[in-house]
Length: 190
Image (tube, rainbow, N blue to C red; front, top):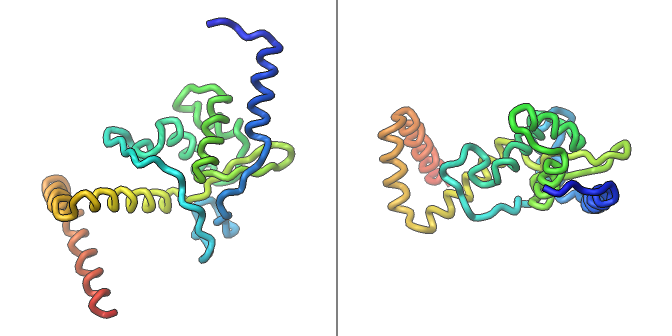
């Protein structure tokens, strides 16, 4: 690796500063005076996130639909529970995953572009916060995945899903049965 000269390093940092200098508020705030993830006021839904249609089945959690580092950064932002500058997010991420501050800044900006985070300037620093509460995003992603699978073949999906639950977790299968009955009952009442 060739070391960067001081001038080259300054120029690289200027480029990063230009990249993050224009705050974007793509998503509306859902804070209601409490911690992040509190219930969002009605009518304040954020823009749908820009996610790829690829699902990595072998990955864990949100890394199934985001990159591994993107998922770690999102988790750090949710854990912080308040708008935070990149350095604070970085300190949270490096507890379990060694990564450079500039890499975290790049990932934070990618998550802003995907409408998963919003950034705003406070006290001269850019602060990042989640547009979606963790469980809201989990439900949104799950629905997109299910819709995609159902478009492939609803009967095959339903049969495979029931078989998998029967083999692994009969309690979840019973819960699914209750959900189906409740939904059918609600449909009949309409």
